[in-house]
Image (cartoon, rainbow, N blue to C red):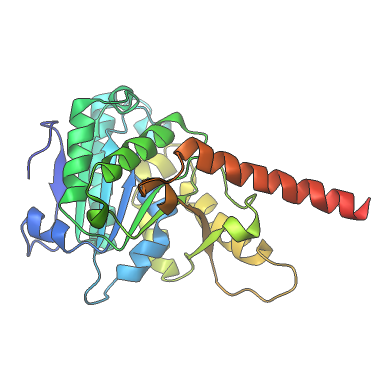
Length: 283
């Protein structure tokens, strides 16, 4: 398995399959911008596959993660050193979560933000063509991190480049930088992220360069999941111990479907109508 960037890293935690065979077995694929995004937004997919025969979770990190904030023990690390640390942390998370395969493409964020970048496009198209996942987890189009948006758009482009019959049956946009609890209930997809809580904690803690480096993603992600589960509905007991919200991106990968922009604008308009209607109803 070859990618455009010589620094790309391919890791099969079990060691029992070659990368091509491992990728073919993937049933749940998560494509993200940075190391630890997978573990923040796709705990439900990891849980779906964890020690489940016939299920396999695959992770893809597109950028090299060199621009992360750092303090404490990591304050003096160069961007190159930080890339090495984060690469090993992502491998450790893949081992803990028993992923089928973990790919780190190592592209600079600036390249991902360039529409039509040949290397990024070829790498993502090759990955999607080499597997047939039941569900794909991406960043959501209402995220406020520019690199997240770029990775999501490049992924959508890669999926749409496939023959229609080869495209995944379900594509979900998940929350990281900006929650999705604002969506109208009819547009929310509740991902059960409350399973395997001890594993979830270990996965988030694997990224010590972030946690002890000044960003407590471990506490924040677990807390957000619990909060979503409780505040989802006011008139029923909690169905899940933890929820990650997602929105359905499947329509945008179908021929004749809306653009990502128009699809997202419709979701925002529906939310605006819900708020406006509720105020008017009780004014």
